[in-house]
Image (cartoon, rainbow, N blue to C red; front, side, top):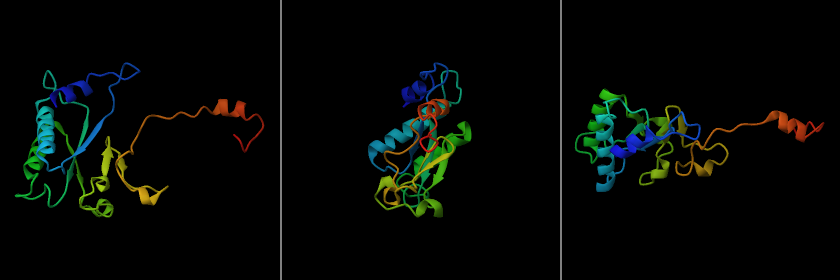
Length: 164
């Protein structure tokens, strides 16, 4: 996890001057392996980079869910407490409350595809206006920037306004 955090903060994008924007949503996996990954990711983030700097990426989003990590005695409560400690020092992770009404309406117990996710600090992934039957998290998100070359489209469509 330390290597992941360091690599995401030193790997340059194709432009050569910016590191890749990356986000990780976690907190609800109660398997031993999932817990180990989250614990060590939080510890690596808390430790910081080489000179103790706060890592910019990945953006961390800790998903809070009653019955999983919100109350003492729940399987991931210790990870929630660690996330609070790390957030107090590094301002990450951010917290997503799966039981909030605007998130809970999508949630289906046992189906991680219905746990709302966030990309960066703004984009919430779950709803699907185009196809309401596909309100899922997996396979969705921001892929890259999109540019529309309006002069080229204008030249290509000549005087065809509808085509333009």
